[in-house]
Length: 314
Image (cartoon, rainbow, N blue to C red; front, side, top):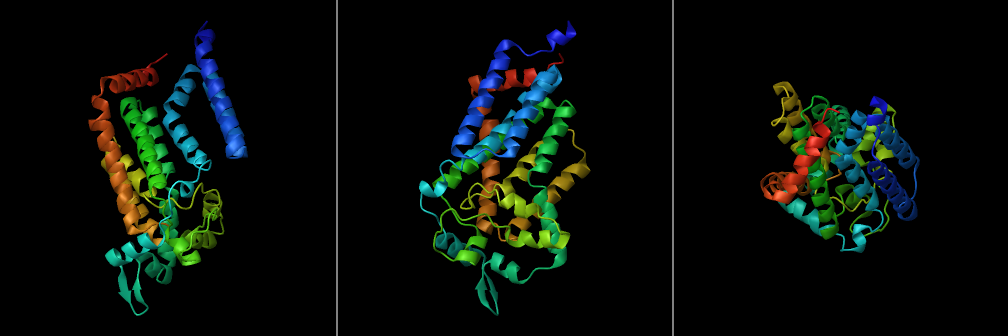
């Protein structure tokens, strides 16, 4: 009888099946099916039907799944087809605000670091950027597994919300990253492949091709503003103060956050302007979610039911 009680309802089963079918069809037709799509489908199905506890985990991880799908689906309509790409304007603004005077003339911080870099910073930059998504996801899983599930839910939904704000920004103001100007100048070249930029030095140093693999799958290179790399650890650090995290872990999060901000500029992937707007994006998402959306009865009621479901014990 216990096995039967752990089975999903017919309604839950159909919702899962139809959702997976729609996702796979749209992805296959407009993005292109990749092996990881099949792996994720299989993993979700196994977890959903394995037990009630793993089924709750699937539901709890839904915000992260929607983040991944949304990012992938940006390939359907590239942002440069919606608005013009800002290449020269952003570069010149960065130089006027943060330019560094050298014997070679006035350089952006990215151009300065392209000339002045060292192995220690190259290695640390790679480590920091590898923390970009894994650390927030591990933090979320930690909240979930230690049954701080209300805090987890707020964190996960704000993480998704901040991404959606950032994605809207990509379409409102398509912008080229610093490495694009270094490689191609100021003329827009559509369908430009992703580039590891300064992170390539980490790959060369370690003999790995981690960043080459990651940036080879970039959904859109003209998405420099805002820097979501710079936003994620802001959200993570904020919700660490709403959890029972030890002080040393919060300090580590702050260190990683500052390291990612530095690496974004050091590696040539973002301007300081992009990083600043990424931080603003994160803070905006937190404020809107916690102080505006949560005051709407229908929304807060939905969140309460969502939290009750993932907190239930059987």
